[in-house]
Length: 235
Image (cartoon, rainbow, N blue to C red; front, side, top):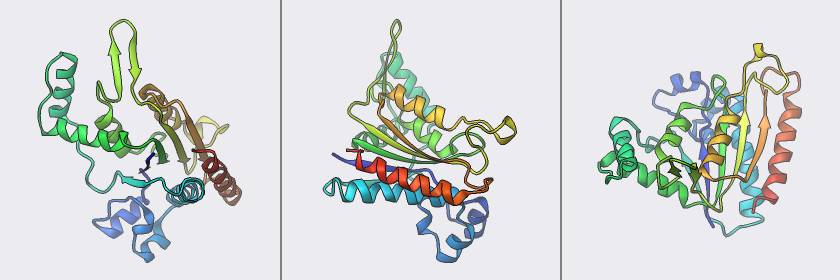
């Protein structure tokens, strides 16, 4: 069994501007002064909860499970543009897909599919998911790999034996808040995609909101406790 941590967490825009070429990824990789000054609550909690899962499951419960971090911001995620889309349509037409873009998409899918357990670190961006995570979804969601399709029966998810844990954070949005505090297109979108792809076993950790709230510390404590508890039953 293998597990993949998919990191879409990023630092706030000020950190990106101050660091110049820094494109995000694991906030612990930032220079110390930037990390202290600019890493927001979203990134911090996402990293802490991800590490709590790793420490309580991958190290204590299943210490022999290899763990790979799939940093979506490290520059290796391929684009999915007209060339790759044309190859995808060729599959639907019963033709052989060709091209470097298609090969890159297949390689990305194989890396993703090699794991049995997924940990997604997902901050809310403008009510939804970060664009880089949507790009990842577009790259790997290919016919015959992530899904099958029948003109009569519709879609069938092809991922089997997988389990996912998702860590959600948001600065302002929170369940039960009015529309002036935003809407949730984050969790419904990602979980609908996971189920569409065949991953029905989804465990979640929420820290929403973590900024516009009077008691962020309590919310953080609860999220940490949830992460530790989830990890022990993630096998």
